[in-house]
Length: 585
Image 1 (tube, rainbow, N blue to C red):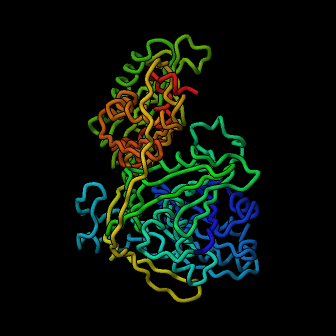
Image 2: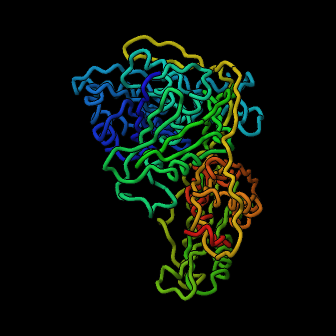
Image 3: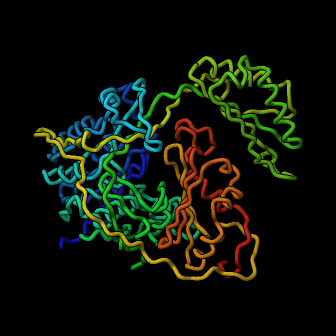
């Protein structure tokens, strides 16, 4: 049995705290420094960057961080693994090598490539090897792709570390792979060690978003100390896949069953969490606090993964524009109706001429408003179309014409008249794992392939025991749902996930009996017409709902005010319901 490996996170997204790498390297003992820079939207952003700067489609902030900590990492034997390579892992590796040369350092740098399928799309489509992730229908249109990247698992990373790499850069791996990889390397896991791998994936899922595991975006943030400067997390992964989560001493935030549960619910579907290395069963996860800012996760079990890899495809979606007019005081609905009718009268194109039109009346106004801002509601009309001319100045000029001719108190928000903006459309797909091998390249040395195929083997999964408390009865009080329950929500392509959790067995019993799909639709009218899946995770005292199509064709094309559904859970918590008094704090 090898000692546990302590894997620290220093980035949860492209744009996270630049000083985090130094904080994690200098703030306490770690074995590996990792960071997650990629998301579906990030791939689109990097594609636009690469158009302006060939071979520059990677996260340059990672290179900056390496300049800050590379020497210390080499001195202390700290490995670095990051997916900051984005669309150009080779370019990222070369940039890091330039920094090393400037510093007089000599790290072994490796990168993993092969995930970029853009040059192969016509070939894969012709061979019927690319299908839609949700419908299973073949993808037939090979034109106008911006990005197409397969989600690799951990084995390319393991291979690079076995080759002696000090720094490993990847392209589009799963977020959890950058943690599971070092754990599998240290402990010598095989490709069919389902439970250990599942534990590593779950550990990676918890710390992949950085401070979201230590109090960031946590529903009960008012209970958490030091939130003005939240510390980043680490995961100490044992040989059996069990993990202790923590953070460096004297940093803000907290590590608790609540913060870890909240992050486990982030951007998931059902209990079977599919991945390229293992299917992790979230209904087997068990959590316990084992000390101050220390939570142990154990019992995680896994099953064989699918025989396919998920592919993130981004296409050009066309152009978009929107108008936002403020409606103040009395007669809000009448004002909205007049502005909308007058706008379409002034616009040279009718609503039927656009590919997509969304109209929203956002009632932020309050009765008897004490401030001007409290008197304001917003009417927003969003349009999308393949033709830039339709959504450009012809659209925005029609808004300007209304300023003196329609409602009293007219004013707009945002910038003035503008042309249409291009947007991307996200499309998830699947490709057979055997046709997408990983390639590990040691900078200045050899390269070799690593198979993406995982052999089949038997797995025996037993869900964790459910809490046995009965549903509390008795007197109730009309209060916000969030008085008792926490939530976490996010985007899954065009879908949104909404996880909600209890902090006691009695709370879970009530939540499970109360919040079904019908009730969710009543509480959140915006989802009433959409398909909603409900998943139970009793050992985590949690429910997870997947709302299909809420974000239209993905974050980059969504016309919602909250395009990534990050606040969906907090909206649910704000809804007033009849809560049993025995559950109240």
